[in-house]
Image (cartoon, rainbow, N blue to C red):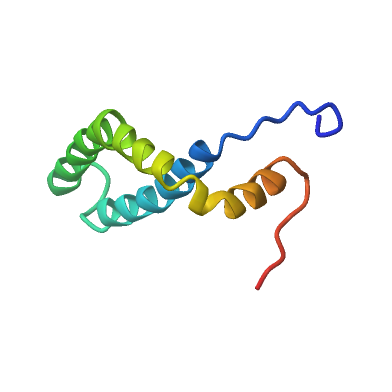
Length: 95
């Protein structure tokens, strides 16, 4: 697939995915700490997460896209590196 140029990388989606993974892990840890599955406190936080997710997708993401466009040229080098990495089958070297 790489040889056929079948992979198309969109830098904004890479950035969104990286930030989304970070925030999701924070929410997951917080919800998990609120009690066992089915508990009232946990269910309240799951409901809060549902509303947060809706707000983040429909309100925050478009605003972040505008900021992304404004900072595009400042981040060009990193985006090119990300494009090369995500378009390949190579793994990043561990620090």
